[in-house]
Length: 100
Length: 136
Image (cartoon, chains in turn yellow, red):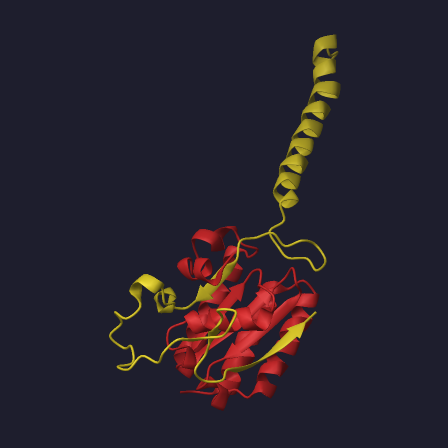
């Protein structure tokens, strides 16, 4: 059986070109997603918005809501501020610092 | 950015968090870790990831003060850009988690962060602090 010129071109050029185009499109589609890597790498700038995780977010006091909580202490301690306006906590807090 | 602005947007699995450095799976694990740590210890665990104003210690203490009943709250503040982490324990928590324990948790967190594992470090820190605090 002899193939005509058009079907020869279709089989030996058309199909490989179609396969190559398919693979190339898959590769570029994949690289689009990985280009915007959403992760932290040491030494690279970290430009995400600050996040604050809390199991119960309603526990963070907001100025407008203060004083309306049922479990607020009956006697509010005065808010102490140092010369720079920073709040001085009534009790000492503990903890640790580290850097990497 | 002031502490007040941060206080307005405590995000948990939504809003900012969706565009944060974590995958959905990591966010779910973080949420679960916080919930379990809260339940088991009776304390309030909280994680802040973002820029810290200098001096970082004072700023982190200010954030900690915004949490209700901050005496019974633990704040883990991480600043990837400044490569700095602060663990703040409230007055009551301090009796259960010594500063040495906090430093130990901070060390393992810093080790994970240095390897680029932000979520893993935070999880390890929560785990260690909750273990040291014991059951309520």
